[in-house]
Amino acid sequence: MSDLIFVYGALRKGASNDWRMAEARWLGPAEIAGTLVKIDWYPGLVLGEGCLVKGEVYEVGPELMKELDEFEGIGLKDDRNGEYHRIRAEVLLAGVKTEVWIYEWLKGVEGYPVVGSGDWLRG
Image 1 (cartoon, helix red, strand yellow):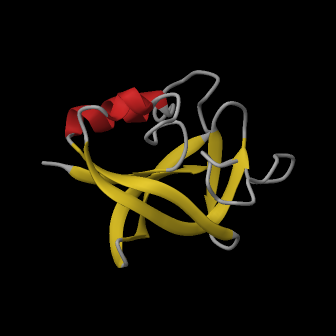
Image 2 (cartoon, helix red, strand yellow; image 1 turned 180 degrees about the vertical axis):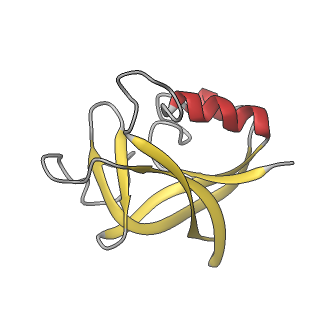
Image 3 (cartoon, one colour; image 1 turned 60 degrees about the vertical axis):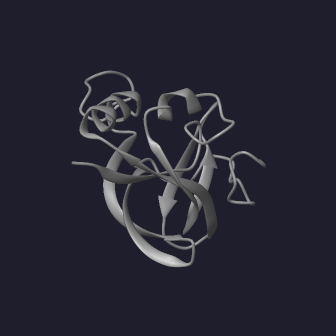
């Protein structure tokens, strides 16, 4: 069984960790309303008002989803614990509202630079 996931930062095509998506099926560019912030070499997305955050939707299997959860620190007891959670949300994919998984940043936007374009690859 596979799931759909929206990626908006280091996992996107052309970004530093895009190789992690090699086993996934790319479905296309998508967007969602929220605020994109620069954490370090990676971004965080807080859903809600802000701008349209650009990303991509992939179809992934359960093993890859588990690997992505580990990469994002989901369920791990290390210094990343509590940065993200994986939730269901609707993105606009090819003009169609599509339910996907998203890693949402949990530490808010205060104190982090906002990526005004909503596009991590453009800055």
